[in-house]
Image 1 (cartoon, rainbow, N blue to C red):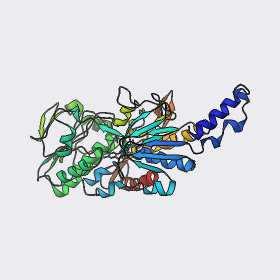
Image 2 (cartoon, protein in one colour; image 1 turned 120 degrees about the horizontal axis):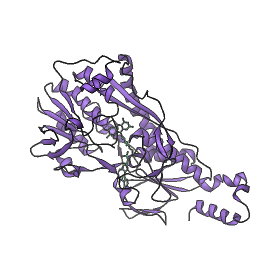
Image 3 (cartoon, rainbow, N blue to C red; image 1 turned 45 degrees about the vertical axis):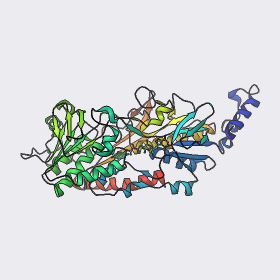
Image 4 (cartoon, rainbow, N blue to C red; image 1 turned 180 degrees about the horizontal axis):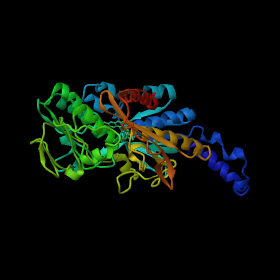
Length: 454
Ligand SMILES: Cc1cc2nc3c(=O)[nH]c(=O)nc-3n(C[C@H](O)[C@H](O)[C@H](O)COP(=O)(O)OP(=O)(O)OC[C@H]3O[C@@H](n4cnc5c(N)ncnc54)[C@H](O)[C@@H]3O)c2cc1C
């Protein structure tokens, strides 16, 4: 039994019947000592898990915090599209766990979690280890549903038509294919249905490649095929494409935006195009041998295809019974406690967080709120009302930055956006503001990694 359980149960047993709750002295309601040495195990050392581990130890160094992670080095997904346009290298995506261990005293077990016993409060691993916990945090990220499209599979993704939405060898393969694409070749980017990780990501990637192709392969074509009719940051992103790549916005966007900003109609449109859901952009089939992608409107012959398939919570969330029929994990929004299993909190991409996007920024914010909630709960204090933020920076080009920035609160049991309309880079932003946006994006990559892992 954990020190926490011993002290709390012992105390409760001794005092029950003697005092009514209302008469408990203040010190007894906040027995900070009872949290001492409590064991928190975290599954997944990505953005959510690493941040939770760091902040738990910062808030209470006496906690025993153990991260169980499959891989010895984290490959960060955010910023990974910049490997494709040679702005970054695969090595630069690697993040070490050394500082979390040495500076904060976080324990690491490099193993794959395979199951748990919620009554005994233990998890088990592929390496036959058993770890006991008082509280469990699960931040396993996503799994990609490769089989959502006819002809597509993980094996096809590993060898011919990469996704790279979970970065790794597929990212390196995609970089090689794009940089080696024949002159005048066609790159098709298949965007995912909602919900997916990193809302502007599937649009930033083809934008960066368009910029790269304009230098290295000026007769190339870039086609985004999409099951959706809109996306977060669509107006500012497409305005960037209009200015940088002679992209013609769909008429309905022009009508919506032209009172605020000049939108050029290019007689000779550039290499980038976007086929929306309403125009038949939904992906149906991939043929890796013929190198074709079938969408509702047509079959496109391509040279390189990048697919972001639909996603659901990481497999271990399913195995532990933390996900519902939607494929994601329902939680009490105030503290991300699982509504399906006791003493477990699910954070990051795997959780159902309503208006909060599946982003690293969100996972990091959720981790801090959960760390605080666990500390308070272990100490017998109510946790404060949470408030979260998210900012997703994105690039329409190397020097063309934009963003979406939001604040969230719990409203009637759900997480709702509480800021007003000014979520985006203004459409009439000056060239200097736009350039500054790109610098912010680069600075964020560095400071954010530091906040999570160092
Ligand atoms: C191209 C791209 C660009 C992006 N850009 C941005 C951006 O600009 N801003 C932003 O905020 N977000 C961005 N994101 C999204 C961001 O990377 C994710 O939202 C974030 O990583 C989610 O954190 P997480 O902790 O939920 O999952 P992850 O960071 O994926 O971590 C999950 C961890 O769990 C481990 N794991 C899983 N199962 C097990 C198991 N059974 N046992 C042990 N370990 C396990 C995995 O190995 C992994 O390390 C981007 C994503 C992509 C793909």
